[in-house]
Image (cartoon, rainbow, N blue to C red; front, side):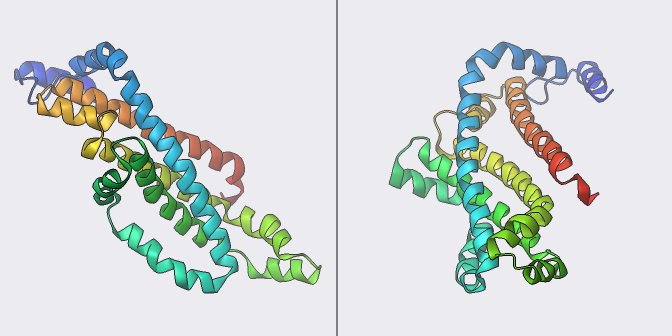
Length: 233
């Protein structure tokens, strides 16, 4: 209904394409330009996956370590807060000056954007562990690793999944933004390119591709949550 209404309004008021394209024109541009945009789609996806795997892994490990060693939390937390409060895109030009105009600065930027999100939510999950269960496990002689594996991690899993989801979305935003800042390839580069030419149908076609990646992230972690953390409901 919404798409049909937009199509009708655009045609009824003769809205120029450079102002707002008709949905039919956007989908036509999406199909016809996809062979040319396919490589850009893969580059952005590779940036996201590579940076996300590194950042999420480091964030999850740090969360586990910090909850076990409170002293380290006091030392590391200020730097994590600095990363969270500083827009990661502001670091992309610096990374490019140091590492060159290749894919690595964008991968690092995605890692810096997604890692703290995973870490903060994971720490919150680890801290919500029922202390009575831990005390009971200790009374039965459970080791620190056994308590972490059998109690802390399973109970923290819902918050960990939330952190992974939020980290994935932040990583996607950073990947696209990094392509816009200094990338010669990628979906962000295509957004800048088509907007500079006022080819709005192609512009919105790229937005659809970015949205597909974001929705896919949400679907993946929603299914993971239902499978591994449905007991929380």
